[in-house]
Length: 288
Image 1 (cartoon, rainbow, N blue to C red):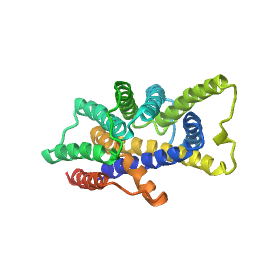
Image 2: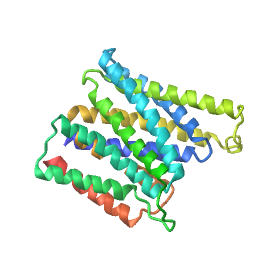
Image 3: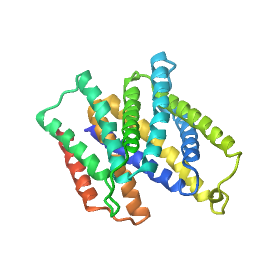
Image 4: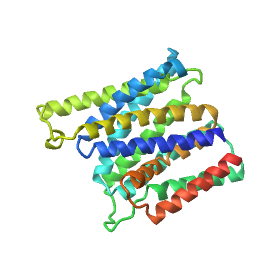
């Protein structure tokens, strides 16, 4: 029960982070949003050390560094794939692969379930596709490059989850702090390279008034993303990597919930079915 609740919370909070990141990216270049939110998230995690602790264990540090490197690669591939589109296909593709990779690893390590448990996991994978799919009039097939980048993003996210899961359970926040530190550093270097290439020019959209609201969205994205990292760490330490990773892949759910509440966007019928399926599958997992 606790693992399912924490896993579901992880997906919702990751989705909240994506929502605010998308809002901020309307006026601020995405690489700036990612790098700045990562730095803010790192500071937030450091303030939590007195609560959750920090370890200089070499395994914890190593797995955290690997998680950060994979995170930088995964996010770069994800943004590139979404830019090529269509999002309605590329996004659920990435989400499903981000669940399958760590789930397969968990099963390899010996995760076992009852028949009802396996059914729930399959239903969750179906729910991931339905929740992430955004139907529209402009239906087109993605290019091979978009599919490759989307698959790479999903595999990279899955690798991040595996790395966090492999860190010692007694390592406190070390893995996620190292993840944030490495990822923010790599993306920060990339941002500097972009600014140098553009000779320090500021985009017109970034020089307009009222930018404080978008920087608040950047901060919110960083806080939610780091909080989701903590939720995942706690969830993976209480239960199965397979279950937690599949639940985490439902992160589009958090995004569409906030879009419905704040932006008054409609939730498509397929997404409604996906949400209902996710809730039913989660309930099955909780009682099996």
